[in-house]
Length: 341
Ligand code: CUA
Image (cartoon, rainbow, N blue to C red; front, top):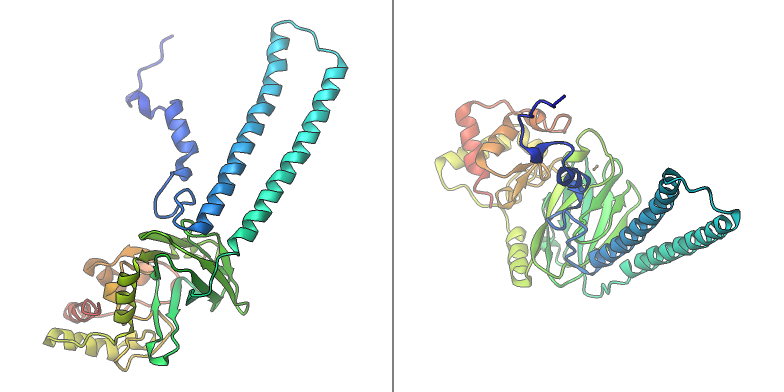
């Protein structure tokens, strides 16, 4: 009996080997902003090398084991009788010795990678404090001059070619900082401050993702990590140190008034205004950031409007309540927030 022709093209058939391979390796794209296979610095390079070593050895072992399984089955099918016991004993002996040797090689490689990760020279490193919160990242750039210290959120800028040391802590539950293009994971444990040193050797925008289940919005706790060339980084730094832009038009002034008199100011800070709360992300330069709500949405006027109207719709369970505003109030608030570049 002939099978009925399928309406879809052959390439979309689930039995298509190319599709099967695609599904198998869907998580292993060889590049992109969140991939260990596209290292941007020495730490990530060490981890990638270790990954390829494990992948190569484990693939070889798998192929050999499957061959040792398939050959006797094939021989039995061909009518050959079982071979004598002596070659089998030799084979098992060799396999056991090889297994022990391979485990030692992998353990040794893993250990030496772990050591190499901690050997980055950090004499002139830039210190950045990162605090995990449900479900966003608070980032402080400390300075010897107290007035130059500033806090931002959900977008980490680092200079290319210079080591950075993240001083990590959590304000609530255990989170984990993971920017696979730059280095390995490090847990943020409340009351147990730790640090993580790494370097990016090329400019680019990478993606960090919380890698420890920390509540319902764990998956939406991401953060762009932007490696800037040194001059661009210094320019970014000095701009972030400045106070927020002052409103210029009547609508912007009304927006600022709404911000300061409604719920907004009880959770957020805007440097240079009377809003100084730190329960939520610092908004002094919110319009300069690429995303909203910890990498959840692109930072556009429409998305910002949706977020203010009903954050629970976009990221259920987060700590920001809906802000009931009339349309013209929301327009004024947006006009003001969009000046905070
Ligand atoms: Cu924070 Cu998962």
